[in-house]
Structures are given as C-alpha cells and as structure tokens.
Image (cartoon, rainbow, N blue to C red):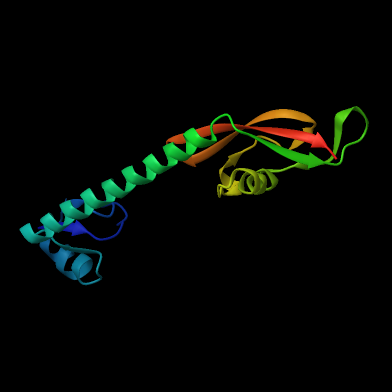
Length: 148
C-alpha cells in the first residue's frame, strides 16, 4: 500500500515522501497514529501543490536575502569602544554588538547568531565580518572599531 508521510518516520522516510508499506503497517500504525495518509490521486495532487507552494516560498525568501545581501555588501559600521595604549581594546566587540550597530546605523535587523565572527574583535581598526542571511547567501561588511 502506498502512503504519504505526514511527518518523519525513522527508518521509513521524511515528511512528504510517498512510501510503499504493508497494508497492516499502514492501517495499524501510520494511518491510526496520524503519521501518514493513503496515497490516493486527490492526496497526491494536494502533495504536489504543497511542494510547489513550499518551493515558491523558499525561492522568495532566498531572493529577499540576496537583495538584502547586495544592499549590505561593502557597507561599513563604526563601533566606539574604550581603548588603552597601543590600540588595545578594553573588553572586545562581540557579534551581539555588531548586530546592534547594524540595526542602529544601517536600519536592518540581523540576528547575532548570523554574524560570522571567528573570535571577538580585540583591536582597533577595520575588520571584515561575514553575515549569513540565508543558507545560500552570505555577505561581508566592514566593522571599524574606534577609540572613544
């Protein structure tokens, strides 16, 4: 019997997959617990429409991220921190502070987890910082750390 999975089932498949299982397993396990539904022609058409819609939404999200990436590409933000002799910063500039400054200075909301810093910035000067806007879209901005 062919069944469309409504959720991930271990050792069987992922949500949206059409799998062939025994009739007893389908009726007593998958259908009864709401893990799948019978693969009738109507249900198959619904599945096609859902996949097409999900693909359309994913494409729109990626295009929006690419547009934001082009807008942010090469921009510079300034972060003022206390510093001592020799350009040594007291403390450091973290991804959270970079995200806050992007929001203040450039007007775009960026999650601090999306700011790609290998280590906090501990020196004055300009540093290139990557920002992952989407799994397929990454852009770079310059962070200019200056003394107060």
